[in-house]
Image (tube, rainbow, N blue to C red; front, side):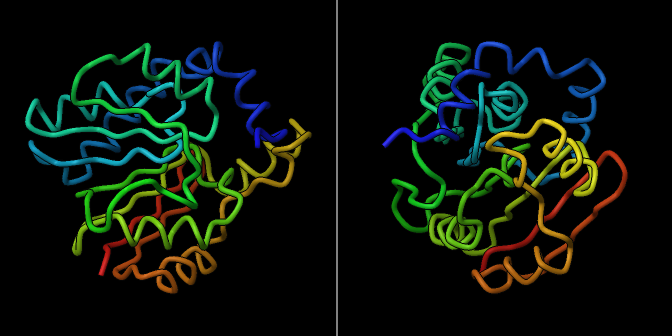
Amino acid sequence: MHDERQAFFDRLASEWDHGFSTEHFDRISRILDSMTIRPGFQVLDLGCGTGVLFGYLKRKVGESGSITGIDFSLRMACTARQNFPAENINVIAADVSALPFADRRFDLAIAFQSFPHFADKGKSLEEMHRVLKSGAAVWVVHLESSEELANHHRRHGGVVAGDVLPAPQEMKRLMTANGFCRVVIQDDPHLYLASAVNT
């Protein structure tokens, strides 16, 4: 069933990329450079939107690796597919809380600018744990702090008014409760990073 939240992001798909400046893209590049992403990696992009990360990730995984993008907005997923038709980039319209993949498939998962919109964050992390290989990393990345993002969504209102990033202690609890260890969280002005390793 296509709900109000999905329809909200469908409407934004055509203009989504315009919300990112050159400075944003420079910051994204630096953040991805800080991650261990090797040639041949199978990378899962959770809430991929229009494929903002795909170009960066493709350069890192090379032709022997792959990127799989998931988004619950059909319009976002279709735009990502149109933007990046490469053979080793796959895009699926699906919910992160019910990932259509076999166990232990991926080497890395990234949720960029998307985690607050996951309706069931615990179930979503449980699914990430299931599809990631043992020792694989998961990253939750935002270009705002949790407080900045909460204020932004409150100002916007509507279906995203209550979409927030968990406070560091709550995120650590969620991650450890769903099979992750070595949790590291940074919640600073203009940056929220949460990383963990799958058990």
